[in-house]
Length: 314
Ligand SMILES: Cc1cc2nc3c(=O)[nH]c(=O)nc-3n(C[C@H](O)[C@H](O)[C@H](O)COP(=O)(O)O)c2cc1C
Image 1 (cartoon, rainbow, N blue to C red):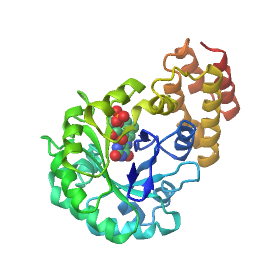
Image 2 (tube, rainbow, N blue to C red):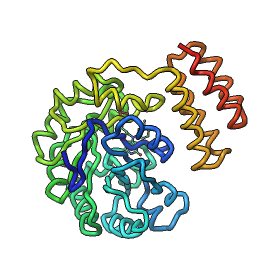
Image 3 (cartoon, helix red, strand yellow):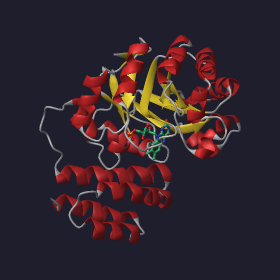
């Protein structure tokens, strides 16, 4: 399967997640075979106003390829302007956020609010296509309050999109209910470009079901990868009964902490690691006590000691 001219060989991509899919987490996931990686969402206005924080989000390295940079905004001119500003740190793919339901994003007519205006979705794709030579993808929801994902997908394809990721919930549903396989299937029927199904993939079985029932080309995994990055190897090889040993998990968790501290400095790294550690501890014997220790730990070496102790857990 190809997205534009980029060959994709695995079955599951890493869905964009603000506050989660930073360089450290993407590199951790890369060890388990990710089809392609998506950044956290990046504001086109932040790039235009030269925000240091926004530019830090576009930074990526050689382990996380192909790398899709996700942009959000509402004005086609802002998108083309912003894309021209990232020439020095080029991603492999530009992805456009048409699915975020957060109030502060939809208030500005960005994210899922774009789905209320399918023509504007097309204009944004065209403006990005015209501004760069990279493949452009879009990430949509089922719709705003009613389902119009197939219509939006067709318009985006016509405007030059190379693939569509569909989260099968409407904006109004936010994260309630479930991601509709039927909607993903309808989008797949509506377009000829690759369709990436998204929503609720928390196991290899769920990935297999989505691929089979919707005929989508790939799945994108979001929440299911938090505290569980090995899910990618399980989706790629669902029939293998390979499990990740406690020793291997402990090694990966230590590495995650080291990477966060390297990329963000020890103080920020430790703070951000706590939320990941809380997810890593799900299902672990004496998790409550370990979480308490994690939240009390003040230095990287104290945290590493806790991570290291996990290899003796069952
Ligand atoms: C913490 C968090 C942050 C997210 N940030 C983004 C984002 O920046 N851009 C985006 O398109 N979707 C974002 N999403 C939505 C996910 O990419 C995905 O569509 C959604 O969580 C459903 O998939 P899942 O069930 O595999 O998590 C976010 C979701 C979560 C939980």
